[in-house]
Length: 494
Ligand code: NAD
Figure 1 (cartoon, rainbow, N blue to C red):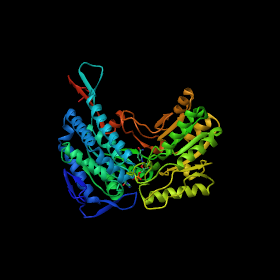
Figure 2: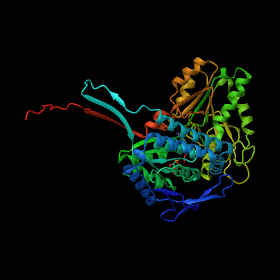
Figure 3: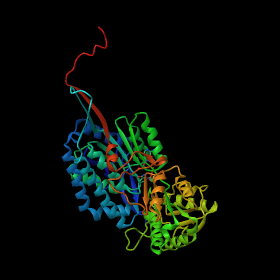
Figure 4: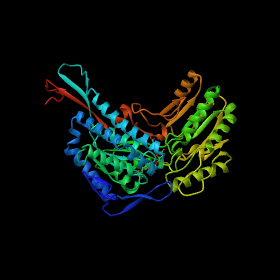
């Protein structure tokens, strides 16, 4: 396979029908890392047709569940075999550290294993009591059909696995479109799916831009479901495009996630150190390009000065550089556009009265780097507090009462995730119960479990990934009602 043959249709690798290609850039120095096919509408239609045929004619939807689970486990094993290679590729393509790249491969492996186990441990249909021994009534779950899977650039492989693994476990066929900025590990994953024995046409891949490829997938009449992870603006376009054909739509969108710290969490030196450390982790891991980044620090007023001073001191010490270099803790932003966006948000915050405590600039040299930035004295009137920056920018707001903390944390149009720090377990649980966010961490930030649903309230999305609900997204529910002793009903006299 030449490196420009990155479109996978009906089991074969090919170049774009138009012959167009796209350079994939290394965000650490803006040099070309790879050249991929730039798919268009024609390639997308071909991929959807292949997935349609593979669904309608099989064999994948009718493959016994034990064989489907076995294939997912083979993919997991192959991911572990190629862990170093794929982790390195993810690190270079998305700009994350090598260790983060490796951890991503492990998380992807877990997702494939989890969905294999989940379908194997199911009991099948549910018998319903219809009130008569002559009626056998059962509720069963079937695959939805052809799934269009659209993924973002921040966790390319991870987001792909949260969709591909449950889609295949449930017996669907799919077409995936990775972000045009970071397609390389999705191409690698498709190779592993083929090596593991996925039948031709059951999994298809089109590399290319959101419009036309993603837009075509969202509107195409032969697609039954579209599962999208990305920004709010693109998500609303996907939903509109899917409306005419009444597809099932799942959206995992952005977040503006609060990290609420009560003073009692920092009453001891150890508690203080932990809360500061985790606030840094919440905001700056992967340079803040995380949908669940704890980018809003909401801190009890009495603790503000001490906490922010220490946070800023440690933020200044974060070592930024190429993700594959030894000792680097934060890589570059993914693109020139993302860097410009971050710079613009920081300028607007400073113009609106925020106080710069750390960072606020890009270092000298090539690449899309930006220093971890702490903005103090922020408030809800500022764009930087309301909108998702998706860069290494942490804003600080303060509260005096528990009610005030909850009100601030819920004052967002998003609702993806949030953290609460308190030494008072009762208070922590009470506040967690009042937060309108899909995931709430108490005295922690960022961990997720494949067994636990992931998704958002409000404009953070529709539906859930992971957990049993993450599998249910890829299924239709059917009620089969069998009359074992049919007789005329005589509703009509004649
Ligand atoms: P994006 O919306 O720009 O792109 C996401 C994907 O959608 C890409 O593949 C893109 O090509 C495609 N796309 C763009 N326009 C489209 C259209 N009109 N129709 C169909 N597809 C289209 O997002 P991004 O910048 O790649 O990713 C960052 C965003 O993703 C952030 O908002 C982040 O919060 C979100 N995200 C959310 C989660 C979550 O689990 N909720 C996880 C990761 C990222």
